[in-house]
Length: 221
Length: 281
Image (tube, rainbow over all chains, first blue to last red; front, side, top):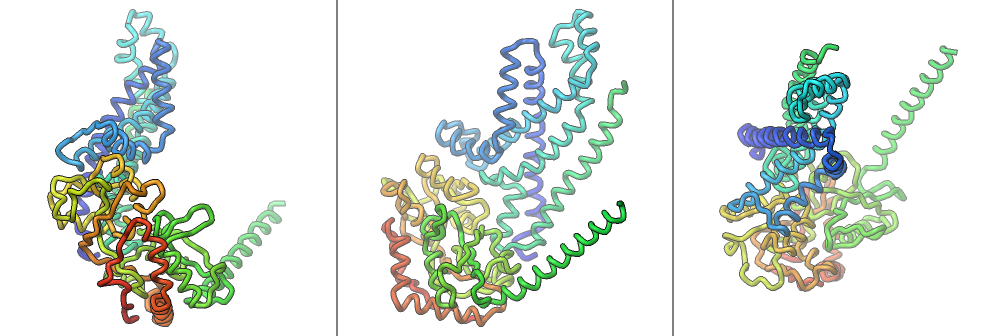
């Protein structure tokens, strides 16, 4: 495949993709959980805040979020996440935007998980004298996560593939390397297939594992 | 009832197969280089590159468009018979080798790697990598003055790779398209934008940026723009080269360059332009 694409550049690019995906997955899970709690909370203002978050970020194209993180947030508002290097700033913003965007989907997946829990559970928790926070932490969220593993898995897989969008702000992940290779060697099916295969290797086993996990952890009712 | 349904489905699929077969043969007949009298002549250009290949509504403007129109005329296709096809950088070889376009005139630098997949006629213009800066910025005079400055280019582009090699300490912000770089340059997020001087001149000539941006004018690479055609099609290549030579001698070339790249005060490098065409192979 010529000098443009070597195993080491390929591995480092996919390494960057994995790091980007892992950090963003953690961020999205935390953010999504917080927003889901807001949306099911008994306080109207917090519910509206959660709904607003989901509607705004779920309906904004990720590319737009990415580009505005650099053109808007960094260059105009001056929010630089890594003043020492442009690359570092782009990478961190990519993590933030992937987290923010997928957080909205995580929230909705979790909320669907919450909806699988019979009303009696929340009522029982409340009658035992648990506060909203306690009943969330000990009764509702654990069941919600177990019920929502399959949709959360879909979100995770989508997130892994969406890391490629970070190429539009110059993060050196897999899609970036693919563009470099195509530029240097001309477009060809083989280059495309190598990168497609890379993503299949990342996502396919994960999907199978999450499916079996969702089956094993399902709350039997 | 059921049998009749199956029969209908079979008939429909046989018909569909027949149609695709026809489609294939028609395409084979039509795409034999340059010919196909009366049929549309499909030319791949950029749709988003001011001064070179730009689509605005139903209007196409730019140097690439003018050169392609001239060549098409010489090959016997009226301007009305040309069908413009968008050819993003990453798809140019595929569009040519699969016969979706008859030729590509899209800031297409002649390189050996690309020659393995397609053939080039031309060159019709010799560009060079240069820098675009804000009009009031005199601190950047060339690539050597870039240390400590913030530079912008397109993800994965040759220009981006070049400048990383040439100025290792440069801070390079990459975006998906040059438009974003221009926006960043105007908002002072970056200090310079680098790519081919033709592309830079095109942006600097745009109405909304007139007087705000300038091309530094110290090219540090050679990009020989060729016309991509199907690999091994020397007959068409010869015809195109003759057409380019004619365009240069009858001054249409100079006019096209002045019209499209002139407004930004862009000076064509007279040492390399107008270029002599390579032998076809």
